Every structure is written in C-alpha cells, then in structure tokens.
Image 1 (cartoon, rainbow, N blue to C red):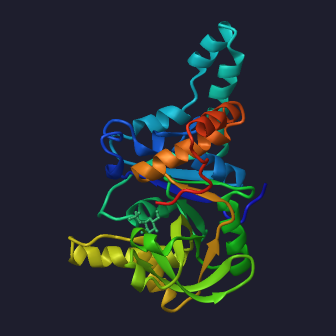
Image 2 (image 1 turned 90 degrees about the vertical axis):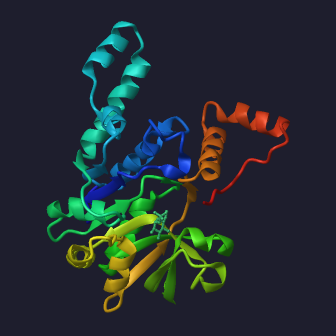
Image 3 (image 1 turned 45 degrees about the vertical axis):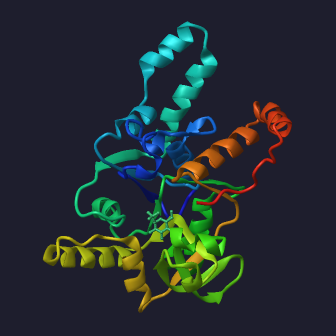
Length: 305
Ligand code: G1P
C-alpha cells in the first residue's frame, strides 16, 4: 500500500521505571502483550499502515529489541530439520516484518525529554512528515491507529495528535488538548496541549496517547528548544513544547482514534492489557473466558493509564 507518510520513529530509550523491577533486565518494549512483545504490535501497526522506514531509537540495555527482529537462519534451519515448520515460519515472519519496515536503530544522545529521540532521527527526515509512536500504547482496531493518523494528515497537511476520550479523573496522567473546533469523523482542530493538568484545569476530556504526525515545522521548533538548551543545559526537550510553540501560529489537529487502547506503561494497565489480549486470543481465548467466568471476573473492554 502506498502511503503519503513512509517514515516512523519509535522512541525506545526510556527506563520503564514505572514497571520496575520487571524492567530491570528486560526492556519494557519487550514485555509480552498476548503472544507478542509490545514493540512488535507497534511495528506491525506501522507496516500494516504502509510505513517502509522505521527508526527505533534505543539506549544501552535495549539489545533484546534488535535480537527479536534480527533474522536467524541458523535457528530456522534447526527448527525445519526437527520438523517444526510452524515455529520456523513464525521466526522467519518476524524478520520479514522487520525487512518490510526497513527497521534501523539509532542510539539516543542528548538532553532528557521525549523530543530528543525525534531530533536524533530527524537528520533523515528531509521535508517529509513522519509518524512518532510511543511503543507502550497498544491499539486493537479495524483500521490501524497509524493509518487513521495518516488519513488525518492527508486531510489537513498539518501536524496531527492521536487522541482518545478519557475519564477526567485521569487528566493528571496525560497531555490534554485545547479543542478549538470539532470537525467530522473525530478530527479536532486544537490550539495546544496542557501537560498533565489537575482534573479541574483540564481543557477537554481527551488524552494525547502517544501517536503523532510530526512535520518539518515541529522539528524546527524542537531544534529551537535545543538552541535554548545550550544556554540552559538543565533544560529538557519535549514534543509538547514544540507542538505548543508551533500551534501558536499554525494549525494543529487531533484525531480521536477509533479502537481499543491499552496503555502498557504502568503495572495495572499492563496487566489489564495482558488479560484482555489473553481473552481475545483466537486459540486460548475461549478457555480463558470460561476461566474468567468461573473466577467471577467480567472480561475488561478497555484499559486506561
Ligand atoms: C507523554 C506525553 C503526554 C501523553 C503521554 C501518552 O507523557 O508528554 O502528552 O499524554 O505521553 O502516553 P509521559 O507519559 O511520557 O510522561
């Protein structure tokens, strides 16, 4: 499928401190949700949306991510010799996914903050818009979240943020958009984002959920922050600040994503995502649903942070 956006960045250098000690040795991106590590869900979403150039920005201790996507012909041959073609196919399919997504890795360097990995990868962007997806938000949807963001970009030629309706009590966990106009099909014109406001200060009932279409103008704003960082090296570089600076003079949109969202970034939400994925599994789901029923639990329908 041809896409107007062909590049994506997955920032994967974070410590995963909210999930310690689980994430002491295992990168949070490699924790399983269902039968796949979290980051594989993100890569599949991107490849299914026509992305052919994925940069994963990593830090020390994230080698397991590369191991997961690396081709392993020796293992495949061993499995085939043992007659285990199903497993061999599954191992080969992941390498094929990485090849289709043309995954490359970049070491994160520079100031603290979620704008830094985007800037690290930005040298390759040229004039192109790119998708930025946090790897700890997993979506189950008919149309992949990335594709919904691309469609919003195609309609607006402007930066776009992925949004979900949230419980107002959760506003202190998220960036909350200031909505200027409600357009059709979940598309909103926004004038900025307030980071983690108290419930009474939240400007809307939507949360930014870790998916962005970034345009060259946003990258310019991130570079502007870096210039200031050189003068005040205790500063941090954030995407939200760049989006707000951009939105002061130009149009920015939010797209309310149609689908089910699993925020895997904190322990309860991670376990909820695991539970829901297990219940939805085509082979094991029916037995697990019976088990959940016997244990007196209602299957969850949606997770939040
Ligand atoms: C970041 C963003 C925030 C967004 C959140 C989604 O915050 O700054 O706007 O709502 O991701 O996961 P973080 O959770 O990294 O503090």
